[in-house]
Length: 116
Image 1: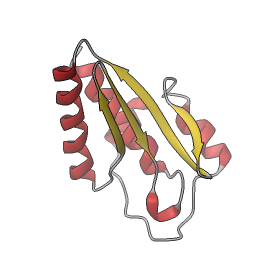
Image 2: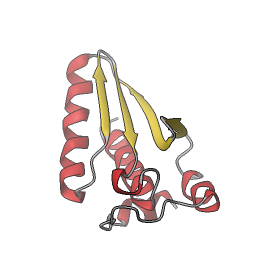
Image 3: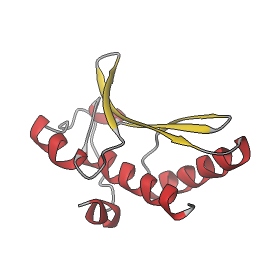
Image 4: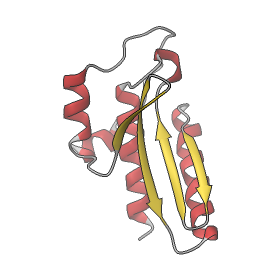
């Protein structure tokens, strides 16, 4: 399933569009075990922390995530610190989670795995 999510492209969402249903979230998060669904200010989001040996590697990863975000026109919250990067995906236009977020989480994991 992770491979299939990585191969998918994000679709444009309209403001007020449908958020992912609980059953969809359960299905889409299964191949993404290190991601957690968290609620911030009543908005469900996908969150994962990636560990690095130093700030330079963390910053390089941040820039790669930024590149795929631009390609897909879907942008995360990113917190870059010494030795770690926290990535948060959610769809602003629907006010919560959408399949696009799971697609981008899978693509973010693929970036991380490729640099090991």
